[in-house]
Length: 409
Ligand code: T4K
Image 1 (cartoon, rainbow, N blue to C red):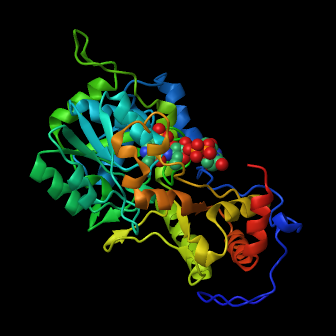
Image 2 (spheres, rainbow, N blue to C red):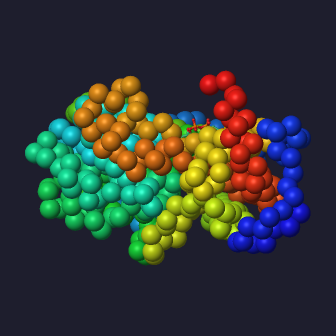
């Protein structure tokens, strides 16, 4: 079998499992696997919990984690939360907003649900076709007297057009909350990614390059918001005798903080390994007709949270769905993040801004995007075999498309 890096050469490829061959992998290869620390390191942190009998509510490990995250993120403050969804909901509540929040439909459902849970109305804005992020020019057209905030997502960790978004917000007196759930560790224009807007939120879910099993954070620089977020995440309690605002329990436990502290030490190594693997994918898939990579803005140090390909069916030979099906047959668990669009959810379809014709780039992207497995411990030879499967699907695209059409819906 011949393959030259970056150039697609005709080759006699393996018979795809979808077409009757043996699967490329005996066991599923997942989209991601959480990085785990050495047991001894984790156990050492857990010992602290047993010694102090302190399990949650602002314990020493949560405080230590917040200090370290704040240093890493270069922000004025960092408040941890039990997950990214509650971090986002609480961030929106802390700003005391009323009315509409302009956001992207091309995101995990939690982004838009948080707007709704905060009693606000989402307004969907189309994305840029190349970066997949909220298109600031489209957002400008959606601003009205009802607009309260912008909620852009650094999707797949790719930085938004922060200069355009911040200029827009300033011109119209809007707040900006960035959903940076995917972007921990990213540096853009020489600054860590959480430095833009009024607030940014992160997810520390197990599926992220940096995680605490479950967890999240809100970062910003306004001292009043720091105080409010602390109270809001603890049922609105400010002191023994003072409860203010509609709080909730959004606290991170000491057990999760222990995982976070141990995993934080591994983050740079994790990103380094992912960068090498992502480069390997790119080298093998670059030039393959109909395979498009997400455009990363200049001055960006990425965290490689995801490795995505956009499939142009006309040039690739078969659809993203056919490729997805063929990879599943090989035991490669690629994922269609983020399909379906949030605007197609029955909860939001009623909104005027959710009409598909208003979101052409997002609609096209949701039909074409595919995320391939990527995590630090993924063996190099797995990347090679996954890339080879994609190349094989391209070569046998007509037969794969026919097999897809023959599958029951
Ligand atoms: N904003 C954005 C833009 C987000 O993407 C997210 C979450 C949020 C906000 C909200 O943050 P959180 O409230 O979740 O902190 C996953 C994650 O659950 C979710 O956190 C994440 N985004 C989203 C993109 O992905 P699923 O349902 O696709 O994950 P799941 O269970 O299918 O896991 C994916 C793969 O990871 C599995 O096939 C195997 C592997 N895995 C997973 C877990 C949980 C493991 O190997 N071990 C594990 O423990 O949502």
